[in-house]
Structures are given as C-alpha cells and as structure tokens.
Length: 125
Image (spheres, rainbow, N blue to C red):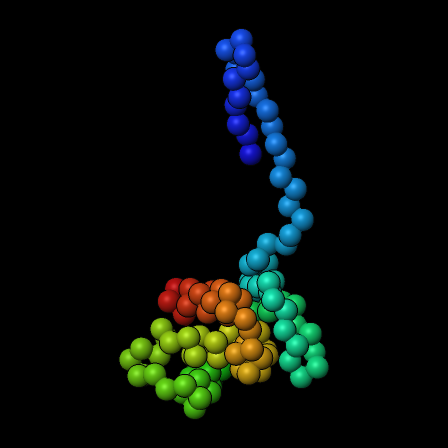
C-alpha cells in the first residue's frame, strides 16, 4: 500500500507502508484441489478439521446423484432448483472433500457460505 504525503514545503514525499500477511489465504486452488482454510475449525467425530480440501475432478455422475439423494433425504427442495440449494451444494462439497455430509453441516456460517459458493461455481461452470 502506498500513499503520498505533502510536507510543509509543499513538496511531494512518498512513504511506503508494508502490510505483513501472516494469515493464510482463505481459499486456494492448487493442482485442481480447492482448499478452504476454515476461520472457525470444527471437531467432528473427535477429529479436528482445520481445512476442507475439495477435488472436483474426483466426482463422477454417481457421486453427484448420491449427493442429491443425501441432500433431499434431509432437506427437500424442488428438483428444478436443486443446483441452487445449499443442501445439495453442501452434499457435493462433502463428496468432493471425501467428508461426511454431517461434517459439512457443522461448519460455522461464514465457512459454510464460502464452501457452498465455491461448489456453486463448480456446478454452474
């Protein structure tokens, strides 16, 4: 980040400020694997989950259909709008991450919203 500041003589003086990034990027894509670093890690079945790694290339038709069945069994949404439903997107994210659907449902709001937005991008691409 840079800004210019006038000194008393009216001359322009440049001052540089460095911002140190200590925090990891929230969402990264490396080699086809999308990683979401959770702001609020969760504990599921006595396992701490700090990140969700989704490999959308690992999905096939059967896994996508299973995701639909899993999401419809728990939260109904009309079939014409299934790709837009958060329940289905969460189920697809779970399948891509090879995690139980219930683990994804345990994510805090901000992490869950990011996950379903990433999945929505995949589904609508």
